[in-house]
Image (tube, rainbow, N blue to C red):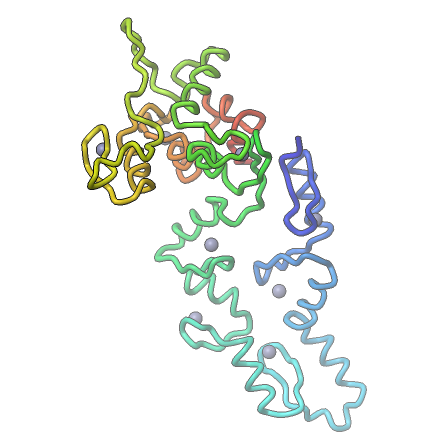
Length: 298
Ligand SMILES: [Zn+2]
Ligand SMILES: [Zn+2]
Ligand SMILES: [Zn+2]
Ligand SMILES: [Zn+2]
Ligand SMILES: [Zn+2]
Ligand SMILES: [Zn+2]
Ligand SMILES: [Zn+2]
Ligand SMILES: [Zn+2]
């Protein structure tokens, strides 16, 4: 099953290297502007506009008798009027955050305003922007749901897709089913405790008492009531979201031993912290060839 996917031309690749080679050959990246182009000709156009003063100068040279076309002092592009230059400068060289005029606005925004070029969010500290970029929110949709084969950018999104019962091929899957599945995987691979807190089985099964999905039967005449704490909600979906808070924190990070009530929360923790960049027994279970294609760290 291919796990790597080129966002530009929809081709599948079986290895990360295959995708990387393909991308660098077919979809050039401009190091100056942090921008990737879907075709070589788009990239060439881009370079002609933004990165080629000399070429444009030499073209003008041909009819150099009247070389007095006004031109942009940042990129050298020539216009037939000063107004044309002004419009170009305002459109291409003005920073929307501080109004500074610069040659390369994208670069200025990244370096001076810590702006993510993809979502235009700005960050308070360089570290935060770095984390945001590393989190994979803008990476290709390389993670595949093992059941419906829909692609996701992040392993935690696949976990959410399953835990929320949103997979069309596993519509009845519950949070408890996900736990049971992984308990079973742990047992089979002799990795008890890798992703779930070991269960103390003193006779009775400690199965979750938390209902996995509330139905219309929760209506008590006034509200949809939580059968654990009796709190009332006006909507069934609010009650269902609330039920998650009663879910026991059975998921545990092997490294830092923090616990989580959802697999997706644990996987998110790996995506956003150093714990995720270390190989550990959990990655054997939740690894690329396993359930969630995690982790993707190189
Ligand atoms: Zn491609
Ligand atoms: Zn560029
Ligand atoms: Zn210009
Ligand atoms: Zn600025
Ligand atoms: Zn972003
Ligand atoms: Zn699915
Ligand atoms: Zn409750
Ligand atoms: Zn951890």
